[in-house]
Image 1: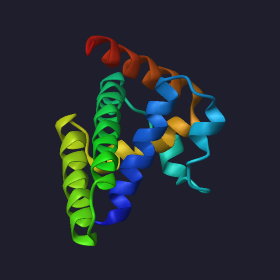
Image 2: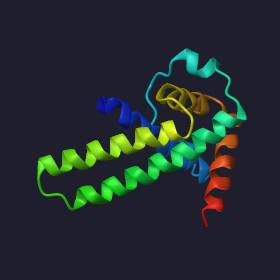
Image 3: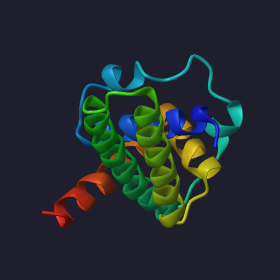
Length: 134
């Protein structure tokens, strides 16, 4: 899998996570790319897709945090590559397990950056998921 796919997943997961925790929008949006495809802004998503995105974003973020912690203890480039490769696979599995394709996950994330109402809905779903996990 291309490294850009997982960076995209991680970046968008972090954005969704930041939105859910009600961090200032500027902090979350500072991570976005300069140009989003117009198609992402025009797409409509069901509540079920947004709930799936929220669940996947939480998982993607947790996997990234575990990988980052593991990377601190690695001493060789090959060990770091193994940690990253494993995390990438796990993140993709998490997105697919949520019922979304990678393209859907990325499209929802891009659209949410352009749509404040969608961001709020995703944030609500993430908070609900966090509440259930306590």
